[in-house]
Image (cartoon, rainbow, N blue to C red; front, side, top):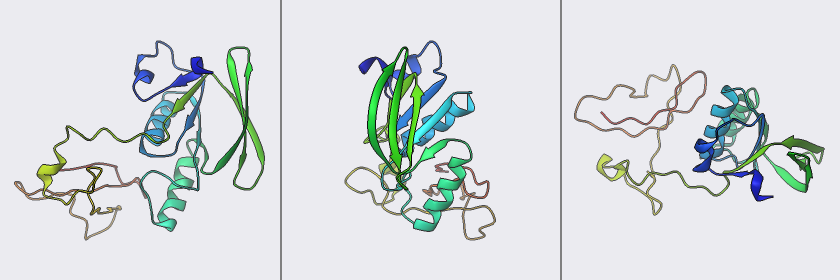
Length: 178
């Protein structure tokens, strides 16, 4: 069903937003685009695997993030695909959630975000002085949560900090270099 498929590249070429969008992949790109489209009025369902969510590895933080995203998106952090079927101009997707409950939805678009790598090539992360892994991602991450006195949100001019600020307790997600 290629006519339903959208990617992080062609989704910005849409002349009209879909009314219901299925996002396959609960990584950074799937969550970011899913949340943005939801806030524009699109009904969004996000399917993930193994309760993985973005880059989060801490189980307690990941579960909290699942709750937060679930308040805005129809988030299924673990699914097993059961079937696809065209219904007129829609694609019916059937799947089972982690509890084995059968679920389905009819979508006029499917955003394939699984396995997508963030486009970091031109950000100049190598200039931050932070150690990078083989994928060009920083190996040290600082989680800043509202009210945390140890979090340096305002580094001195000329210094550089690298932080993933996660949307927990109202904190903004941002990457900063001063």
